[in-house]
Amino acid sequence: MSNSRKLLISIRLVIVLMLMTALTWAVWRIGTRPRGRRLAMGMISGKDKAARHTGSSQRCRESERVMLEQEQWEPYTITKWEQTDEDGFLEEVIEVTRDSQVILRAGGPKADFWVDDVTGDGDSELFVQEYSGGNYGTWDLFIYTGRPDIRKLGGWAIGNYPIEIQDLNGDGKSELIGWEVDSLSGYGNNLCRSPPLPVVFAYKEGNLVEVTRRYPQIVEQELKGLQSSLEHPWKDDPQASWLLPQLLGCAAILGRGKQECDWVRAHLDAAAIQWVSDHQAEIERRVHNRKSPIQKYPEDE
Image (cartoon, rainbow, N blue to C red):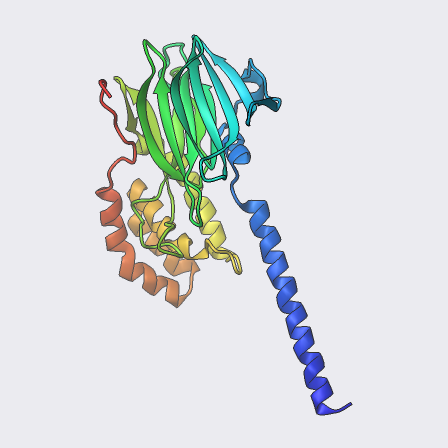
């Protein structure tokens, strides 16, 4: 066999391997990318959203809109629609109506909702999440009360991360367990995404307030997972560059910066040790000075 023939066969093999690698990566991305419905269902932890539904979840066509879901939130009706926007793109819209009058409308390329009692007063609050779309689309979460009238309690940019609702201290009020991405801005694998840090909110005296340090077990669980991942690096994982910043960020929340530096020196390589030495002070400063990601809304809005 001539050398040119061998070269041609080698080139073809390389092309086939590249195509197989690209296909494998694409399948992985499709399987792990957050989607509107999947993300919303994953946001409820320890509770079955389907069991709380009192309305319809079938697809019902009304004019050029498709009703995807409907639920009663007395005295309101919440309906999720799929429709075409003015530019011809599909969007999902959440409408809250009372006596056939639209009181609240929200949505985007993807949107979802659920109801849950976070104030402990026996009346459920409405949670609405909106997806921005685009190449680096993220989710925003907004929380509304319906008593005496619909009013926004707060909201924050939750990125592409799940929200859990649990009563962490047994007082009958649910806490919100989520993530914030502002503290470690710039440490991600691109300019539009940053490593997330766990955050916990509770309803206190009419406001949602951050109470993360009251529940160290939430941060400790994340810290253990990060240590495990760093000991067994994920090859070709797009989040790999986030692990060390997250580790230092979680340690700063718990006030364990020195202990985590000792752990890094005992378990990781020289490059990781140097990186921690260079960035620990800055990450601790950011975490200690971080502002609550909750956006407050005045009573008269």
